[in-house]
Length: 362
Image (cartoon, rainbow, N blue to C red; front, side, top):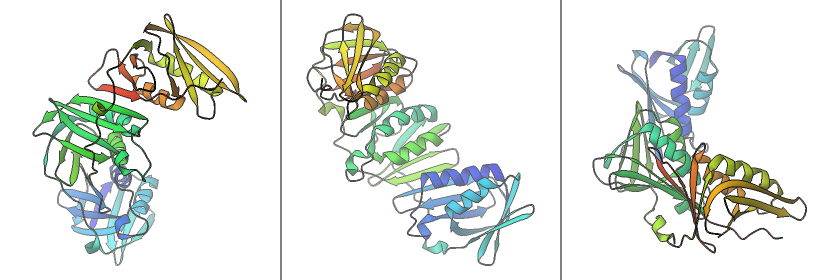
């Protein structure tokens, strides 16, 4: 294999690939990048038997071929180069990365042992990349990171009445996003949230989603990603009691978030703040035997008097997606969930369901 490519785009492709498939350090083959050069350019591929990714890059190919080299060292080397062009050429049992006055050589691994890039050709449809990125930034971040509970580490991706609905929960909160969806056939699958977080950072332009019985695939301009799926049929907000709302609060999300951040400095070891609903305001309170106590009022339109307590960081997470907007808080009595929604939703309709905590101890 022998090719010349623009350094910046090739470095970006390698970096994107490493983030999509970090690799398994205990297995050099599964930590490698498969480079395939042909007349149309170069394809970078990675796979760890659970997920795969391919990224296309433009290159002038002098000699076609396929090689497998360690992925992260290649990405790090390309990122460190300042020259506009780089040459990749096989020299014996090494892949040489050449720039003016410099040569870096990576060992060639046995590419016949690499599982290659998978494919998923099942049902699906198309969605806007910007809308998907907005939805995933909130929903995928809400999933649990506890690998001991894998059923909570995914995002349920489901088509419903011409919309694509994304759901995730870590048992303490749930985020639901709905966005426009050009559907071929119905889609309902549970996808690892950690992968979707990275997909949300990279997607650009129209995005194709598709799934079959065992896998999920997402593709956009020159990039294709596949992954094994989780069992997520259980995940639905309809299993939460949301019909007993007795208090409504309309408030500026930024003002409430800023007040919560300040008051939380005086919260107890659990980080809990109380939101007391009054006339035309909500008053946030926190107390701790060592830190002292704090309270701050925020103007709001209110109906009802139920006054829940929340873990401050979860409240901040619930408000962050609504920055610059007014939000409605639909509050239920007792230890039942609160639903946060935008007063004027945009292309992506977002609902954040937040579970209350026991109030701070006086």
